[in-house]
Length: 143
Image (cartoon, rainbow, N blue to C red; front, side, top):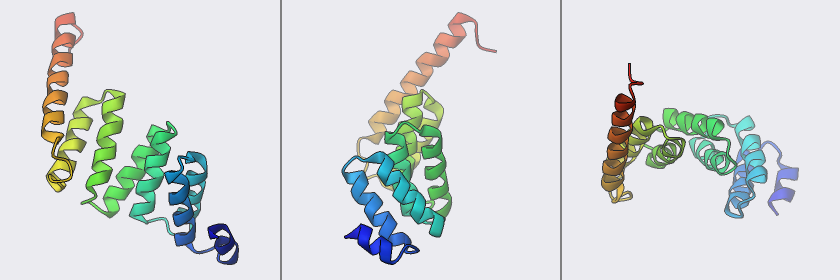
């Protein structure tokens, strides 16, 4: 039905975004990204579309574009705790502990009831960071 509606109203970004969201729920990342791209071509500053495209890009392994989408989402909607959470996950996965701590901390600050386990996550990430910095210093690679 959404495809038919899009055929009838190809300049309606909501229709593309809605179909993209359905593809996302079905884990059809490429299809979802294409629909979110189409929605953003019509309405480039839609924070929720940027957020959802970012989640699909992350699932598809395109972390650089996902980070870009989450950062743009946050420029438009600075209180988007979920975008900070997603950034934290990507940075943590990539081993960028400083940025992961920063992003997870901001998500918790904005919505502590949604992320009640984040203080423990932050403690663990800080411990990992201390260990990694200590390892670099012990190896003599620190400048």
